[in-house]
Image (cartoon, rainbow, N blue to C red; front, side):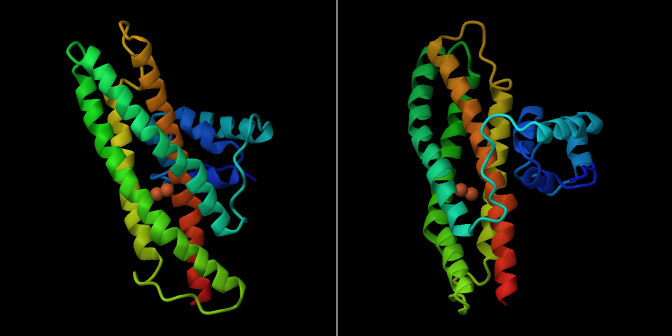
Length: 241
Ligand SMILES: [Fe+2]
Ligand SMILES: [Fe+2]
């Protein structure tokens, strides 16, 4: 496909192989800010748009490493199951591990590095928010999307949703993604982009590396929901109406 700076980040992230990896590396917001044009996103990230277009072209020409599965056509229930297994599973595993690590690092280094206490507080709030957010997706929104898809496939009328249209919970989930995205930005700034100080011990280094991985995973997770699953669910509902 021909690349253009006027295309949205969302469009490029879903259509160009490896684009999300490239955006992640360059600090371009491709999850909550996916609706912006590439040009506007580059202004925000302070990167020349021509450099990004060139990197995207090179990236799509030579797909390296394990590219993400292409979910643009696959059944929605498969995408939802993938998100739950891969991303919700990871978040549920990492929250208690990182909270424990934070307790340890704060107890040793908190006096000399007071920002650690703020990092602990922001991460605790993010963890609580994500736990309740994922539960809503797993218990309400994702099962409804699967039911709607099943009804559509068998030519039946989709079940009545207690929340009106699917756009309502989607909107709520997107607002919560934005809030989580803001917490990630705060963590990135408090950790100086996850750079440990000179006197950091092994646990300190491990913590910052794990927080960076947590950020990357959450960006990818939100991208799959905001840019693929949710727009496709809304389109399916409109098609059935
Ligand atoms: Fe999710
Ligand atoms: Fe979500």
